[in-house]
Length: 410
Image (cartoon, rainbow, N blue to C red; front, side, top):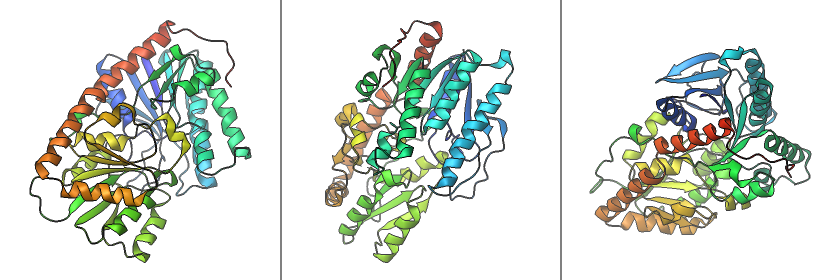
């Protein structure tokens, strides 16, 4: 089966960011499928100075990438909108030029934003291919939770694009375990929905080191985006509370909020926080090897009631780290993971107390808890198994065994 995975922000492990589609493509290839990951030359802006990929085709460890040129940007502004629309148009132009024998049986359009996902659906329809929408964030609800009025023209535009996406889709993959009812309400039959969360490629993760008796302060690592939705002010609030405790917070990543956060660290004298910038995915595990715990912090947003599936959480667990999760969400099966400690979103004092307790925990007990977390993620979130589930769903879509519906999307 020939498959296109279209995600504006997809990357290989040599670059900073999430490698979900790289891992899925690698394991789908091992199952005998012909997979191409379609992504932008300029995805998320990075501070590492890494040159963007050149437009065209590149093979990375056997995974085929097709890089579509998109204009660069540095912050959330009109330039970012231009980048999104530019990628969607560039993809559509490229897809139209692909010869008939090279066209896919199925196109997957991922929605970190809707422009690319809808463009993927429209291209699939023009080529006579099946189309599967992959929902990573629920638009426009995410914008409303960030404070944009529901009747703002841009929110209405996103709502129209969401309806268009659902009308184009032969099937829908969601990363969010609690979102199936939302999509059913929007007119997508349950039989056409498959939950495939994020995960970890355990074959690429290094062995977990022994951490007992490590000298120096207890290190807690956050590795991920620095945006409004990430709620990193809560982390800084916790760090201020713990300045007289041997706990150090290391932040890896980049995003539009990073300059403001760096300014706050300096102006408020929060000297137990280091903002270390983005590192390639291949180096994240190395950064985690010297840590005592991982941190997942998200803003207080209603949209998280549909569940969360962030890459960084599975990276932490794969490295045998206990994880403090500051979010108001039903974690589902992750709530049963012995390595996960949940605190309320926006509550710096609660996050500080959880960090204090972890730092004081017996190192052997903490390591044993981390080992149980690694076993949990191996059992439930190994990309090898997730890719098989995904591919089987795509085969059902292509084979016509998934029932369709004439109901209009709401």
